[in-house]
Image (cartoon, rainbow, N blue to C red; front, top):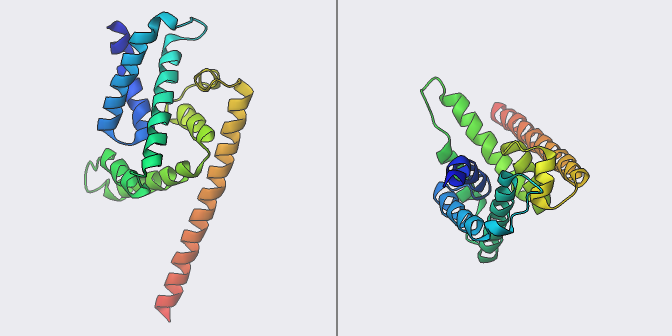
Length: 182
């Protein structure tokens, strides 16, 4: 029971980072703990208990995403809409900043979805869950160097895609202004 209380919020948040739906994340985190309690006897203290639990949670999230992909039930529109629900607008003064953050989050989600699965997993664990590369390596069953390589490639691709996206966006704004001035 202590194990559950100490790691529950982190596991729910990890599941949310993959599934982008709070209810789905809560449901899946319950499945994670069922597996943890059923297989705790197989835990080998080579890694931290939290890392082992994250490994189970990551695998369950990826399995769920694969299942959804096969059924084609999730779209980028739904993910963006769900991500929008997570951002709070605190006041009218913050409205513009909040809308900009929503847009940036939606763009990042779209770009993350384009990454190969292993790069996406490494990026989420490293940047959203703020795990060190050794923990990410254990969770993904890879070497630390392999994780560093995945992160490097993921960041490089995201940087390039985002630069292209914003360059196109600036170009279309500029041409739109030219068209309206004519």
